[in-house]
Image (tube, rainbow, N blue to C red):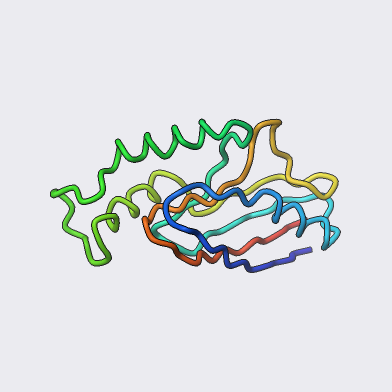
Length: 137
């Protein structure tokens, strides 16, 4: 069986937005018990990650580390069509992921104790991000 759902997730700019609960809610609402869930983000300047969701300082440290790795407005970047954070956002996406495939058991994602699924917005200004969730059993 294959079941799909599309979401639009508004962001308020660069940051981590946990989407674990909406994914689990959908699985339970649709009575999708055992299988795999693939989540695909349809963008080149945002990504998906699994990160600790218990201590918010972990998320702050992730954001700070990416700030150091990919500087907005780096003079070596040629691609700047949408602002100084344009190319740095693409690079952040390239080293993270556009999709995740996660096991599902008893209608819930099989995540570890402190794990959560996050939409990682790399742009500074708000965006509406679109992703597709596909459940396979």
